[in-house]
Length: 492
Ligand code: BGC
Image (tube, rainbow, N blue to C red; front, side, top):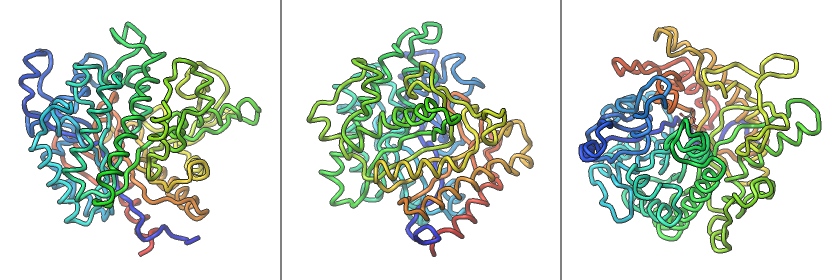
């Protein structure tokens, strides 16, 4: 095995790009409590570009849903500052940039019979062309959580099998036709687990549905996440079928999905905790990876959920099996795992970062769920390679320094904990690669500090500090580390 990563290894940063809007006035008149917003997580610029509202525009307007009461109205203002963002990427010397498209910017009302917005198409074409002029490879995600609000209003979005799959596939088709001559790397969904569980199970993300009537007037946490996940998998698979049948040959691109998972280590050497850690990965990741790479849900999940888990027909199984050209992986941390608990979405295990001797697994981040543990990535990469035998792109990986939102800029850019995180995780990447795991790319999350969903602007994941008052960008030490690391570790 080579000591370095191969010459064509893609590395760079990711963001949750999205959009802007025009014709929001009509929507606002119908719903006076809404005011024009823009989307998530970086773009901002309300009232421009013809975009329709998404479920995140709506959700951020509901009191109490976002920790600091903020919205994506301005975010990092990247709709206006996109050329600066690309210049920043260029200055870092990245090979690739992963962004997501806003569905409601391309088709403001979202549906297959609704009009396409030419301004939206133009904006993304200009953006992609500018990346290419700067030798930066675009990596495009079709869906990073911002469902057009109109589709939720019309038929409850992801809950409606007959409508959503057709509408999503048509949206994808518009994207392939509009950008496919320029784009060779496509992702369908970003983290379907989060869409299903956080949007329809716990209700902490848009559209905020759950069984708890104190939090949501509608929803059924015991059923809806399984239904939504089922439809997300099918929408993904029919989109890939379309791409492979009608676009792949002429456009020469690849297409897949990005799944998120943690690595699960047994809490101690008790047999039940060893079994629990195994089951956690089989359920959390296998819920999506098994159908997509092998054609059906894992039996451990079927046994656990029973008749609440929808079935794939034989025809659907043929479409979903092997419906991703590669393994797109978003991963941030490792959990110590114990048997027990009633959380079906992670396989009924309990997790902690506190070891039996009372010490912590790694360095605590600003997010309660995230501690540094590089060896976890090493294990996970080996597991995925062995289980699914597909080349892997790490499409997100990153760290949020504690209290960074309260620091001066000068202090925040000395982001030692993030730098140490990246040091550990790049080492794990290299170790796995040297052992023969086929890893084709790595994207740090994130290029910029940005709108961190339900945490608003209280948590910062960027390798570049954003001063939200001036929108000025300041490279942090971690960005310098990554730039240097990839310079040294990718074959020239
Ligand atoms: C998401 C990003 C998010 C990041 C950090 C991922 O789950 O794809 O949108 O900002 O994690 O929480």
